[in-house]
Length: 301
Image 1 (cartoon, rainbow, N blue to C red):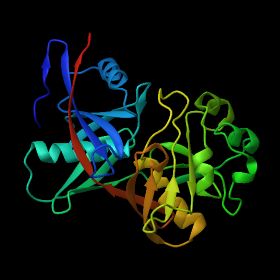
Image 2: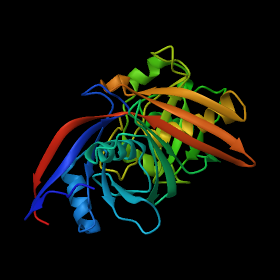
Image 3: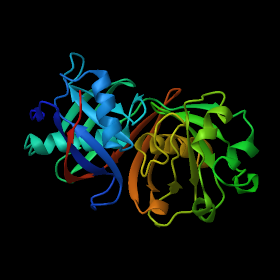
Image 4: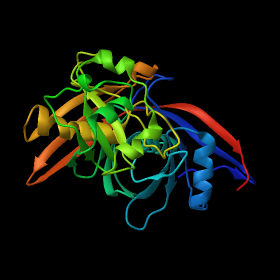
């Protein structure tokens, strides 16, 4: 790995846009390489100063090829899809890798496999097996928390908590028009999501802007995250793929393209692969990332 530039209290963070190859689109992520000398508190300070939805910190691992820790401005995350895509893309570039590679990554969600496709400059990553829990909360309060009415729910499909490493509430919505009307009040989420108060809310829709996409989504951050909306969300897209094959088009295997970020000028796409094996739903996602430059911080550590 390339040495992190730390001179006194000056730190540089690589800035990437994930799930796109177009600068200024997709999901911004910060990546700090060779973070072994940083404490957890220092990582949190850096993430808070960078103020992206997530900043990734790469460390050595005695269990895998490397370890990645992910921080929002408010707390550490078990897993981050766009942070992983940005990290591996950056690592391959910095190490001048000229062939495809398989890597294992230690995360708080477990040890996950990642594939770097050199020809297509794309990262494919495994996620934890999908889990779903039925939502038992107040639907009217839920809809009000994102500025919609109960009639906007697509009642053909269930409202469920879902996870492939991070819990989010999957909320099926009837039309794209409703996505333009959404106004999230994240402060209300914790008191509504009583089963999993740290969950985010992820509205989904079968109407899409792009014909090649099977689903559309938005992602509203958990109340304690320090952010409001995630432009293009890898972990929640993985849940969407598992949800699609469990509730929308039941099957043992699916591959779909998901779009997100259109409403906030940050459109990007995530390809999701889901497969049922025995009683488990195994999920992989893939995407690209574009390098945007370095961010230099002068902070007290």
